[in-house]
Length: 261
Image (cartoon, rainbow, N blue to C red; front, side, top):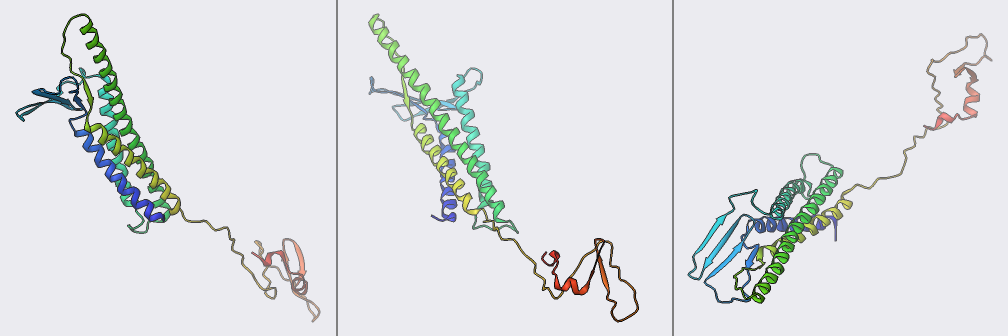
């Protein structure tokens, strides 16, 4: 594919990925109640990064935001931070990539400047996608750990003849949206970095050579020219160059190394 194709496709993929990251961060279904052991229930619970919700069989849904920050698990706060950092980096990279598009000409911006801007936006998109994937993966790992610990506690209580009701949570739809969005952002950033190579102008290795015909010898002397004053037709004017006297005939018959600049 051409450079413009790589750049435009990477730009569009990055936009879709960034939109998906924003949607996943605001969704409430990061973890949903596992209904494997109790498929028929009148209450269905699910949680997100910012609030927990309860949906009743009648269709009424009530959501309650997390009013505390210090009381939340450290892993949940880390996931919040990763998603926010990824969104901020993606937004900045999006603004930079708009001005770096080859099809948009702003003033007298050179191709080398567009290449640097494309590379910068591509790297920022890659970091943004990695932050989103890392945040979703950390939350998924936390869910898996809690799921198996809850299952072990349930079997232990059944063996001790103590019946307890514990809710287990599994993957929600927001996790899959976050994984796909992070992957799209990462792929878009890689394509932007590939497009940067085609925007760099090629450097030529040709050197300019100025040629002067040998019939017009020019001698340079920082101290000026000095001519001899003599009487008679055989006396020839002499030019002083770096302290040496040479006649004009000698200078014409022997080209100087200063003929080529």
